[in-house]
Amino acid sequence: MALQHNKPTTMALLFFLVFEHISTARADIGTAIAYGPPYLPTRCNGNNIDQFPPGNFFVAVNEGLWDNGAACGRRYRLRCLSGRNHPCKTDIIEVQVVNFCPKSPCPSSFLMSKEAFSAISRLSSAKLNVEYIEI
Figure (cartoon, rainbow, N blue to C red):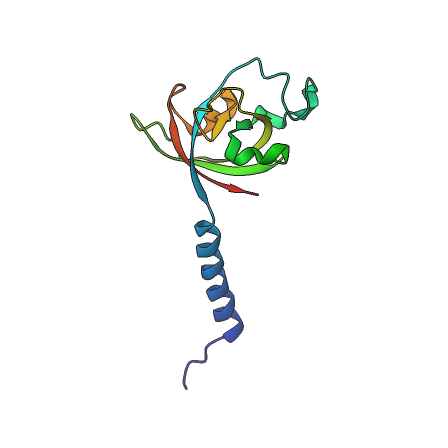
């Protein structure tokens, strides 16, 4: 008796493999550094303390990501790729945009709250190369 292939299962597996490849290919590469308080006021919601997401995983973004303020509230999935002295942890985190980079010129794509930064980096003063995707 010949083995029969289960077409729906094979198609589902093929779809999953293709989708996984496509979603990884959409990610962008940028840089990230930590920035500390004071975090208020922000360009998104001024002095409103409720703008910060649980766990304080938030970022300020550079001009390229700011999109004339449309970036406020956007969420990104971020992971550390590399940096000097091997700072990366293996965690992938989600952050929310709450501010425009307060420095000119901005030193990186993302200025991360200390809580967010320490979730992906072992070193508090590192400059990271990160992979990110809007979610």
